[in-house]
Structure formats: C-alpha cells, structure tokens
Image (cartoon, rainbow, N blue to C red; front, side, top):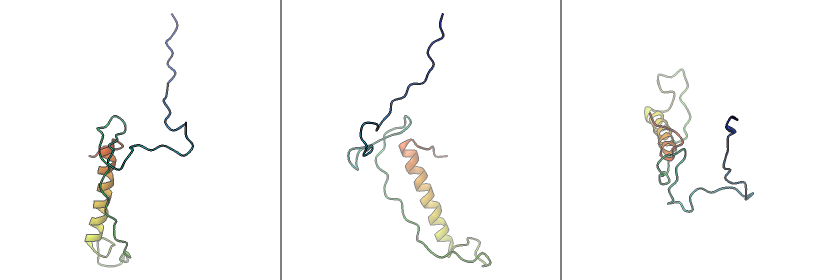
Length: 93
C-alpha cells in the first residue's frame, strides 16, 4: 500500500492582479484572520504626543516629560494589541 500524499496544498490570494489584494469592500466590512471571529475596523489609535524625553540624569523615573506621556505610549501599544487580537492576528493576554 502506497503512503498517502502528504505534500501541503495552499490557496494563494492575490496572484491574479498585480495591484494587490483588499480585504473588506468598505471601511465597515468585517474581516478575520486565522479562524478568528470577523470584527469591524478598529477605531483610530490615539497618536502619542511627540515630546523631547527628559535626560536620563533627571529625577524623572519615566525618562519622559511626564508619567502621562509614558502612560499614553502604553495605551497606544495596548490599542494596537487589541486591534490585532480583534482580527485574529494576535491573542491578548
């Protein structure tokens, strides 16, 4: 008895058109990756205000102008993680 064919098979998306692939026809379309539940486009992620860091010799433990700026960075990163998790591209811990 011959061994079954174990060569992987793939479905390629986007090989037909040179201009690329669009997932979701409109900004309100829902999509998912890796078997996730389709989710709507994530709301805008707040931009962290660009500010000059405080010199590392300062009394600030944050090395930013304020703890609020450091917390804004944490919030923005967490928003990115949530957006990826909503698409199924990442899991949130």
